[in-house]
Image (cartoon, rainbow, N blue to C red; front, top):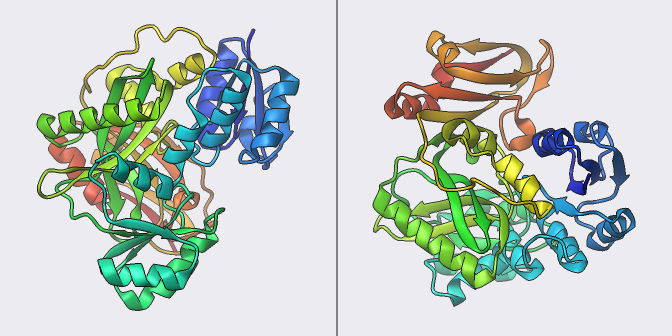
Length: 397
């Protein structure tokens, strides 16, 4: 039996906890939300913030853990790397994980190492940020340097709205620092997906087209479609640049979550490279689509166990995740499903009672349920995800 510490016990973080328990490991969970469901599954729970590195290290030393996991959590990833480094456990360099987890540090690192990068600067003071905005112009993105899940992000269309956007970003930043960044005009879909690095090599990656709901929020993903529709030539460029980045950072082992775009002239731009598994059921869909279980490998790698069989495998079929959400405020009445949607759903988890107040989708906190679907063709899949209100709709009054 090995002891493993999970930073977080939210619903999205339950899969690796369950896997660790199935393997007979001693599971310890930790965060500041005692009602999170993952804590009821583990052997022990600590009420400590996952971003308090020293407090988490104290728990880890007292428990003499064998491994630590920050599953699907950007804020907790640096803490996991810090603890692993201090205790000599499997993991990645703390400094490198900190760079990946902070938008300002990441953009600076990319620029210094000759990656394609949008014009971007970070500011504590709004007045200084406004001078930079005037230089790069609008449209632009205003983001907290250290938030996750698109929290606090504004796609700024008018300079007159800058004050509100800057203040909105500040509310979601622990560092109280805001990125002001030019928008890259992309070709095709934004790309998401997960990968895995072993002994410094990107041995597996599975990329998808990312989808947003134009009717309510154009920044928070509602699902990913596998495989991506981009060409192999562009994907090879993305793979090579990803490997170059991992090598420069000295990344050694563990899961990766990608967000990137290709510009109209074919350049590759990182948006994010998270040193952790993705949310939105990405690992679960990848398991259906390729047979590769990144949840298993995340736990095994954290404990220093061999990751036998982890290798590049193609997507078999056409698959997507989908975050069930409302496009208007009101009281939940029902979930409307078209006949074709019913035939494509592989998994559905929607636990809503009629009469419950629901809000327009503005972030992951507004997700009302999740689905995994399999489609007969890529054309059908893309058409549905881009217009899902025709097939899956939350009815409110």
